[in-house]
Image 1: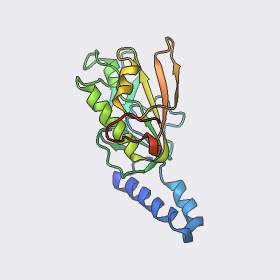
Image 2 (image 1 turned 180 degrees about the vertical axis):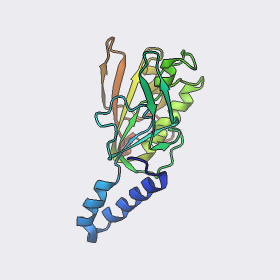
Image 3 (image 1 turned 180 degrees about the horizontal axis):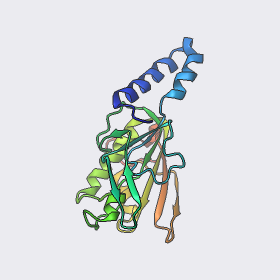
Length: 202
């Protein structure tokens, strides 16, 4: 994404939608569509798990924009395309085909520790934060869009975290030395949206 401003990114998304919805511009829409990012990483951190950390199809977002030297001498760079909070994101509804949601997962960690610098820290009201985050991720997903949620349950069980959304996941997979890291897949379909606050099938 380089150093594109939020206005440029937003205009790109709007331009794509305008062309794509115009039947007279089918050929042009293919070209424009390739230019617009279709993936959002809502809290990218240092982009650790991305193969291409400069993928032009992705908007890398984080609430932080900072650099650190870790205890082993490695550099940690958090340099998002967009600085924003995942509980209140500056994108229109139905903007992305895929959203990646990898929020902080540690409650008990020192404010200035390397773990906090690398992964962030959960606030005391983390259930509210994650509830708002899930809502925002589903809001910016287009219909039938996919949400990939990553969580490490070293301190907070994934079963507790999933209570923060009424949308049920499709499937998931565990990784890591002790199997504590969960990769969970959701899809934004009509029946998966909240109805009168009641839990519904995804």
